[in-house]
Length: 116
Image (cartoon, rainbow, N blue to C red; front, side, top):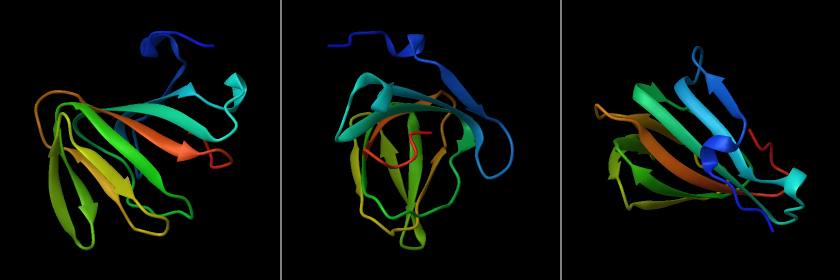
């Protein structure tokens, strides 16, 4: 069993390029013996965003705090604390922070996908 505060997980920072103002952490992954899923948390600074991308695996997202938008099917959908999002394999998507505070969300992906 593993119990830790999320801020104790090593952080990877994305400040330029296709991702801007993003901090990512692997909370539970292959190094913990997780054989089916990887749990990550991302924090987006105001005006921060993930890259516009797609991949072969699904993922599930739960928004913990802040306000933002998710790009799907050629338009932006508002999201905020308490929203859950399912992104199927192959769907182009992006997340951006539209508020003045940090946008934080937990993201689950299947084992075998790149963890960060």
